[in-house]
Length: 335
Ligand code: AQP
Image (cartoon, rainbow, N blue to C red):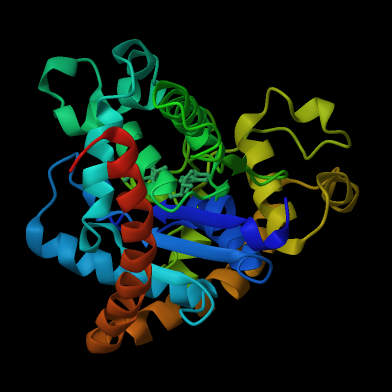
């Protein structure tokens, strides 16, 4: 495929403070891709309302997620940056795809099971069909590449199944491309600082489980100091880390931030105790995260500017979406 035809789409939910998991698992990749390909990055506010949001806070979070994109290095002249609900084609295509996707496919989605918890009957219908909306987000632009954290891999596979079924059902071979997930190799899932079996998440109750992009140097140091580890020193080999999930997570974070392989990090740190390593980790985190946090705060003091960025993105996105939707309506037989 020529570079011209490649198109990147991805989104982040405006559900609160963005954290190190969002940065290392997704946004870092967004930034490097904008140098190579045409990219569309979306603040997915319609996804956010699949669980109840305080309307005032949601508005603020949409702007703050936009500020976080810009502060992390996204450029609104190079990439299309907008919020999902401003382009109504996302909801229209989602409805069409609701009629293509099968119940059995959605029943297999593990994120719904995790987020709905033990009482699924009380979850919103929106939360259940969230992956169909995600498929619509991507297919509306005929995106070919989707940078995401490993937690979104299953939803991407579903998107490919939906695209394939649409192409077969309506006899329009290759109409929708089958999008490829782009998952970071070294750190595809940043884990909670309190529990190495859970991913770092905005909605986790304890703020000590995550490093937020807006955390101060002091907060980062405190969180790293309190991060769960074990009593053994840092080992020499990756094999010895297999069952030490919290230690592995911290070492992986250090490796990603310093651009060193885990092997190199172990060479540097083996035999040292965690208090020594945690000091080093705090230093590199403060150096890389605090400038982003400072920029987010600066950008949030000019909300008019942030709104202008979103409007500019909406205009570009709407044009592309409408061109594709015209063809989709025609294929489906809608007048
Ligand atoms: N811990 C993580 N490690 C690696 N990647 C992650 N992502 C999220 N958490 C991690 C990736 O960030 C992108 C945006 O995610 P999102 O905010 O839209 O949704 P999410 O995956 O549901 O993230 P959270 O933080 O867990 O949000 P809440 O708590 O609101 O549900 C995605 O590419 C995701 O893979």
